[in-house]
Image (cartoon, rainbow, N blue to C red):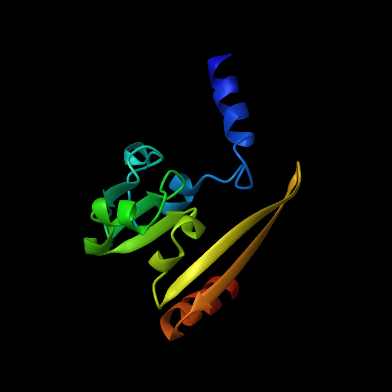
Length: 130
């Protein structure tokens, strides 16, 4: 029963319901799945992978750039996965791959990916091609 309640809470959390970025983020980075959890309360969690250090951030609880600056976010080096980036839009880098997930109905989601900068455009094209 406890497991079911957690899952239901996750589904009711808002427009990202059903998406599990920690699970998705470890793919390609070589991060041990047992070491991945949500950074909701810590704002940033870093995971040392085999190929890259992955910094998973959740900006939902932030009230602005000053709070983000206090976390040391701007000093991090490596790959970034950021949830709720719209809370601190100034944190979006010049070059980025943005993935938005929209809830269409209870069983349908729309994923939209946009690239900023040539390197990320190339990554997006590689991702989309079979």
